[in-house]
Length: 355
Image 1 (spheres, helix red, strand yellow):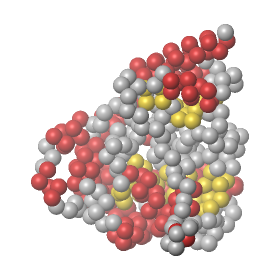
Image 2 (cartoon, one colour):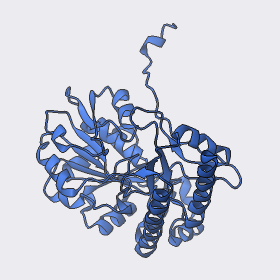
Image 3 (cartoon, helix red, strand yellow):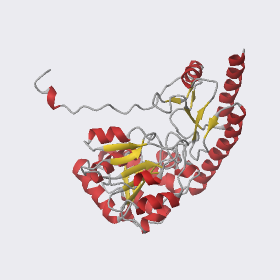
Image 4 (cartoon, helix red, strand yellow):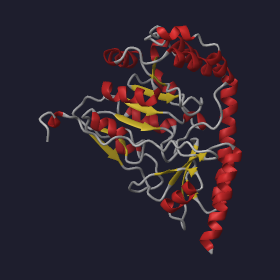
């Protein structure tokens, strides 16, 4: 061991989904939106004044904050933006989870949570989901240092009701509760209205899924003025200029096109509901996902083997080698044509398995 080696901070990093770049591939493994961003985004990109890039961007991200506040009917000082929801969540962990008591999050959930907890030396406890992969809210009534969970959950797609989340908030008013709503636009009801009642609630969302801007890296959070103020204090102590000129311009254009946003959501959810019926006919089992993906298992097919067979045909889905879910695949909802390609493969795969 080198003399300085003992002072290195070591963590087991988050492992993102594969990002292959192959002709004619079908990429259904990272929950990206299969449709392009709003037309106004392309226009904003085409008319962007590159001379602005020599100047620092607005550290307060004012143009995007104003657009978000207007769209979601909150005050500007209740909005925080960052470089993707991962940036916003990581900063929230650093800001709000500083107790010597463990924070709580589900055992099957977004796998970045325990990475951040380890990195920031935050004690944590994984709370088991029930047999249907749902939160038992009573498990969160105990003393803790904070609560965080996605809704709908990732990777299961299960949605908790607003009433159950409010019950959880009522039992945790002495800590910050973070509801990660990365997939809420695909069928769930946001807990955003609860901000008027609970000043310890932080709601995190993203442009990566429903607004087709995963490559632009824009995330945001809503909370009380106090919570957002604390987040900004940490941001300005870490990196003042988190949002580029281009991200601010394109993000604003995306928010302002509500018609396209709703049309895209309708197409994805309609495809999801159709594919649920097709998957059920093939013998798959899954919950009632309200996200832009399905979390499926098959009684006769091993998930790892199916994952590898799909990959050989350049069809990419997500496989998690983890307890309780190592026989499940998470499959992003693509376009109707893309899902038909997948379904044709699965029908052929089923015939081969029978022979």
